[in-house]
Image 1 (cartoon, rainbow, N blue to C red):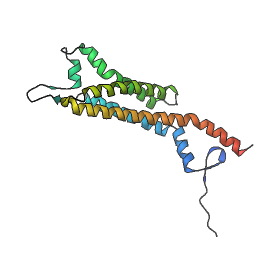
Image 2 (cartoon, one colour):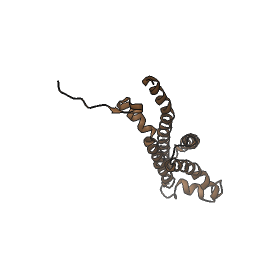
Image 3 (spheres, rainbow, N blue to C red):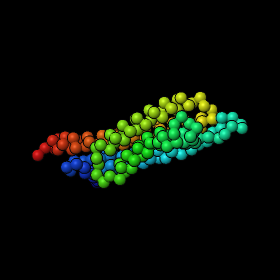
Image 4 (spheres, rainbow, N blue to C red):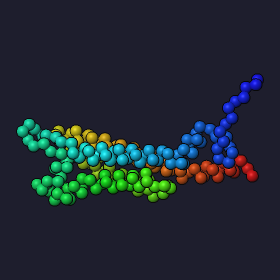
Length: 182
Protein backbone atom coordinates (compact mmCIF):
# COMPACT_ATOMS: atom_id res chain seq x y z
CA UNK A 1 0.00 0.00 0.00
CA UNK A 2 2.29 2.90 0.76
CA UNK A 3 5.36 0.95 -0.19
CA UNK A 4 7.55 2.88 -2.55
CA UNK A 5 9.81 0.58 -4.59
CA UNK A 6 13.39 1.59 -5.26
CA UNK A 7 13.42 3.55 -8.51
CA UNK A 8 15.27 1.83 -11.34
CA UNK A 9 18.62 3.26 -12.31
CA UNK A 10 18.58 5.23 -15.51
CA UNK A 11 20.74 4.09 -18.38
CA UNK A 12 21.06 5.12 -22.01
CA UNK A 13 18.72 7.94 -23.00
CA UNK A 14 16.89 7.79 -19.66
CA UNK A 15 15.62 4.24 -20.20
CA UNK A 16 15.42 2.02 -17.10
CA UNK A 17 18.58 0.00 -16.71
CA UNK A 18 18.68 -3.61 -15.55
CA UNK A 19 21.66 -5.49 -14.17
CA UNK A 20 22.64 -6.95 -17.55
CA UNK A 21 22.89 -3.58 -19.24
CA UNK A 22 24.96 -2.22 -16.33
CA UNK A 23 27.41 -5.09 -16.93
CA UNK A 24 27.56 -4.24 -20.62
CA UNK A 25 28.17 -0.59 -19.78
CA UNK A 26 31.02 -1.63 -17.50
CA UNK A 27 32.52 -3.59 -20.38
CA UNK A 28 32.15 -0.58 -22.65
CA UNK A 29 34.11 1.56 -20.20
CA UNK A 30 36.98 -0.94 -20.43
CA UNK A 31 37.06 -2.34 -16.89
CA UNK A 32 37.18 -6.00 -17.90
CA UNK A 33 39.62 -5.58 -20.78
CA UNK A 34 42.27 -4.14 -18.43
CA UNK A 35 41.80 -7.23 -16.27
CA UNK A 36 42.42 -9.40 -19.33
CA UNK A 37 45.66 -7.59 -20.08
CA UNK A 38 46.80 -8.07 -16.48
CA UNK A 39 46.01 -11.81 -16.70
CA UNK A 40 48.10 -11.97 -19.88
CA UNK A 41 51.03 -10.28 -18.12
CA UNK A 42 50.78 -12.70 -15.17
CA UNK A 43 50.87 -15.63 -17.60
CA UNK A 44 53.89 -14.12 -19.40
CA UNK A 45 55.71 -13.71 -16.08
CA UNK A 46 54.95 -17.34 -15.21
CA UNK A 47 56.29 -18.49 -18.58
CA UNK A 48 59.44 -16.41 -18.14
CA UNK A 49 60.01 -17.89 -14.67
CA UNK A 50 59.41 -21.44 -15.88
CA UNK A 51 62.25 -21.06 -18.39
CA UNK A 52 64.63 -21.04 -15.42
CA UNK A 53 63.18 -24.08 -13.58
CA UNK A 54 65.89 -26.68 -13.28
CA UNK A 55 65.67 -30.41 -13.78
CA UNK A 56 68.04 -33.34 -13.50
CA UNK A 57 67.82 -36.25 -15.90
CA UNK A 58 69.45 -38.68 -13.46
CA UNK A 59 71.53 -38.58 -10.28
CA UNK A 60 75.05 -37.42 -11.07
CA UNK A 61 74.08 -35.64 -14.30
CA UNK A 62 74.18 -31.85 -14.49
CA UNK A 63 71.17 -29.74 -13.57
CA UNK A 64 69.80 -27.75 -16.47
CA UNK A 65 66.90 -25.50 -17.46
CA UNK A 66 65.43 -24.40 -20.78
CA UNK A 67 67.42 -21.20 -20.52
CA UNK A 68 70.66 -23.05 -19.93
CA UNK A 69 69.91 -25.60 -22.64
CA UNK A 70 69.32 -22.92 -25.28
CA UNK A 71 71.95 -20.42 -24.22
CA UNK A 72 74.98 -22.71 -24.09
CA UNK A 73 77.32 -22.87 -27.02
CA UNK A 74 76.99 -26.67 -27.02
CA UNK A 75 73.42 -26.50 -28.35
CA UNK A 76 72.58 -26.52 -32.05
CA UNK A 77 71.84 -22.78 -31.95
CA UNK A 78 74.25 -19.94 -31.16
CA UNK A 79 73.68 -18.54 -27.66
CA UNK A 80 71.97 -15.31 -28.77
CA UNK A 81 69.71 -17.17 -31.21
CA UNK A 82 68.66 -19.63 -28.51
CA UNK A 83 67.78 -16.83 -26.10
CA UNK A 84 65.88 -15.01 -28.83
CA UNK A 85 63.98 -18.19 -29.72
CA UNK A 86 63.13 -18.81 -26.08
CA UNK A 87 61.95 -15.31 -25.13
CA UNK A 88 60.97 -13.42 -28.32
CA UNK A 89 57.38 -14.66 -28.43
CA UNK A 90 56.59 -14.08 -24.77
CA UNK A 91 58.19 -10.62 -24.88
CA UNK A 92 56.06 -9.72 -27.93
CA UNK A 93 52.86 -10.85 -26.22
CA UNK A 94 53.80 -8.99 -23.02
CA UNK A 95 54.62 -5.81 -24.97
CA UNK A 96 51.19 -5.84 -26.64
CA UNK A 97 49.54 -6.38 -23.24
CA UNK A 98 51.44 -3.42 -21.78
CA UNK A 99 50.25 -1.32 -24.74
CA UNK A 100 46.71 -2.42 -23.95
CA UNK A 101 47.03 -1.36 -20.34
CA UNK A 102 48.77 1.93 -21.13
CA UNK A 103 46.35 3.14 -23.80
CA UNK A 104 44.11 5.98 -22.74
CA UNK A 105 41.45 5.39 -25.35
CA UNK A 106 40.53 2.13 -26.92
CA UNK A 107 42.27 1.13 -30.11
CA UNK A 108 40.73 -1.71 -32.08
CA UNK A 109 44.01 -3.15 -33.32
CA UNK A 110 45.46 -3.93 -29.86
CA UNK A 111 43.08 -6.83 -28.99
CA UNK A 112 43.47 -8.21 -32.51
CA UNK A 113 47.27 -8.01 -32.34
CA UNK A 114 47.21 -9.66 -28.92
CA UNK A 115 45.00 -12.48 -30.21
CA UNK A 116 47.25 -13.13 -33.22
CA UNK A 117 50.50 -12.98 -31.23
CA UNK A 118 49.07 -15.24 -28.52
CA UNK A 119 47.81 -17.75 -31.08
CA UNK A 120 51.17 -18.02 -32.83
CA UNK A 121 53.20 -18.13 -29.62
CA UNK A 122 50.92 -20.57 -27.81
CA UNK A 123 50.70 -23.03 -30.71
CA UNK A 124 54.49 -23.13 -30.92
CA UNK A 125 54.91 -23.80 -27.19
CA UNK A 126 52.09 -26.33 -27.03
CA UNK A 127 53.90 -28.23 -29.78
CA UNK A 128 57.23 -27.98 -27.97
CA UNK A 129 55.56 -29.06 -24.73
CA UNK A 130 54.19 -32.12 -26.50
CA UNK A 131 57.62 -33.01 -27.82
CA UNK A 132 59.32 -32.58 -24.44
CA UNK A 133 56.60 -34.29 -22.39
CA UNK A 134 58.57 -37.55 -22.28
CA UNK A 135 61.62 -35.79 -20.75
CA UNK A 136 61.15 -36.66 -17.09
CA UNK A 137 63.78 -34.12 -16.03
CA UNK A 138 61.90 -31.22 -17.57
CA UNK A 139 58.39 -32.35 -16.64
CA UNK A 140 57.97 -29.58 -14.02
CA UNK A 141 59.19 -26.88 -16.40
CA UNK A 142 57.00 -28.18 -19.23
CA UNK A 143 53.90 -28.29 -17.01
CA UNK A 144 54.49 -24.77 -15.71
CA UNK A 145 55.13 -23.49 -19.24
CA UNK A 146 51.96 -25.05 -20.57
CA UNK A 147 49.98 -23.71 -17.60
CA UNK A 148 51.37 -20.23 -18.30
CA UNK A 149 50.38 -20.54 -21.96
CA UNK A 150 46.81 -21.42 -20.88
CA UNK A 151 46.72 -18.40 -18.52
CA UNK A 152 47.86 -16.10 -21.35
CA UNK A 153 45.23 -17.59 -23.66
CA UNK A 154 42.51 -17.07 -21.03
CA UNK A 155 43.55 -13.44 -20.57
CA UNK A 156 43.45 -12.96 -24.33
CA UNK A 157 39.93 -14.38 -24.47
CA UNK A 158 38.85 -11.88 -21.77
CA UNK A 159 40.38 -9.01 -23.79
CA UNK A 160 38.75 -10.09 -27.06
CA UNK A 161 35.33 -10.64 -25.45
CA UNK A 162 35.39 -7.22 -23.80
CA UNK A 163 36.56 -5.59 -27.05
CA UNK A 164 33.61 -7.19 -28.86
CA UNK A 165 31.27 -5.81 -26.21
CA UNK A 166 32.73 -2.33 -26.78
CA UNK A 167 32.17 -2.59 -30.53
CA UNK A 168 28.60 -3.83 -30.09
CA UNK A 169 27.67 -1.14 -27.53
CA UNK A 170 26.98 1.65 -30.09
CA UNK A 171 24.59 -0.67 -31.96
CA UNK A 172 22.71 -1.27 -28.72
CA UNK A 173 22.44 2.47 -28.03
CA UNK A 174 21.00 3.11 -31.51
CA UNK A 175 18.47 0.32 -31.03
CA UNK A 176 17.38 1.77 -27.66
CA UNK A 177 16.98 5.23 -29.19
CA UNK A 178 14.77 3.78 -31.94
CA UNK A 179 12.64 1.96 -29.37
CA UNK A 180 12.32 5.08 -27.19
CA UNK A 181 10.97 7.09 -30.11
CA UNK A 182 11.42 10.80 -30.84
